Length: 521
Image 1: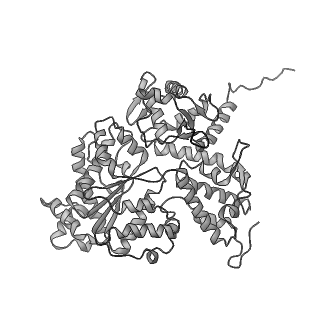
Image 2: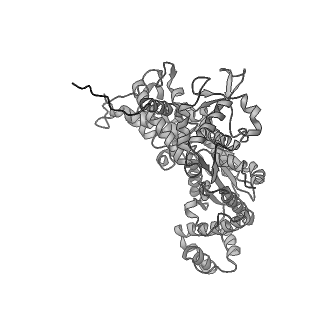
């Protein structure tokens, strides 16, 4: 039953959970960003990239990259420091050949970036382009003839707009930040007080390429090189480029001659926190805020969840609520936020004031299916058959139990699946006849977080630990076969409920759909 309050006619306490767990996107969190922002470490590095080089903000989809960039722009706006965010949508790449060399593409992107910066500036203040800079506006916005001194004037124009950051009272500017985050943000800003800057943020960078085309990573490389050239030509330009972890890992394995470029950019990488405990802190913070809003006298888990623990679907093992939520997040804050949002809404629909075990067990299977479909859509251009290969794991031979198999079983499974579903990845055809093809799919699933690598470790409480694909992106390869055999491979928990439903569906459709025979009288 809902709770009566003096302020509202009837308010279910879980409404506060929905408020602090909206969509998990930067747009959905905009109204509560100050209250829930905990990315102080990433902000500290983003706000002070090195001279003549960009920072690469690397993280999985839904890890909080956009939240860091949006918070940075708000801080800079409050100081009157010029800054703009550009996405591939703002970059007109028509006419850029996919087969062009990286150098030619980099020169084209340099030109396109200059156009995009000037177009963005003109949208907010076209009055900047008077006198000697009128031709910049005319070319970039109205597509007039490019003057011979376009780039010289463009770089000079951007340099003149740069302003120094003044001392800022973070507590006054962002009063809703928790105390520890306030201190870290303030310390980060102090390091750049008095330094001139014009900030360029480029989000969703991997979308400049066409993942379904061989060599598409050259376009990503070209954009990174163009940004670095801009920061070199404009000393006060501070650039930050966001990039998905999977794309960064593939750049390091680029088979089209650009792998050596990673050495130049590796020291520029700022990794978003991607472990389960970090996601747990985000969930804890939001539940605590929801509990305060609901005027609760207990913590968020006690206030909004029934009991201290529950069982997952198809399991009799009881686990505390926090663990049940976190193992279904793919180490992505967005997953956790969207899951708790769905749990709260389902409970409200059923007139429950707390999230119950029954609600959890009913929400998880469709949520697992939704996450699986999200994954397939995220990588559709690069790997169109990803969904079929994910579903194929429902039929894999898990000799180790619990969706866990040996390296030999993984290799044989993907070889067998290739005979049924010929695949194309990044424009390259994969087939059962090619020994590398099974490893290519295996590596893709490992780096995408579908398959986890588990190794023995007596120093850990459970006797094992999981490997981080970011620390060794070259692990899954034919040349490392001996290393692979010492590892157990398990399907990430978040996908298992979906695969169980796939198994049920396959079992129900076994055999031919024959009509029952009627007996003659």
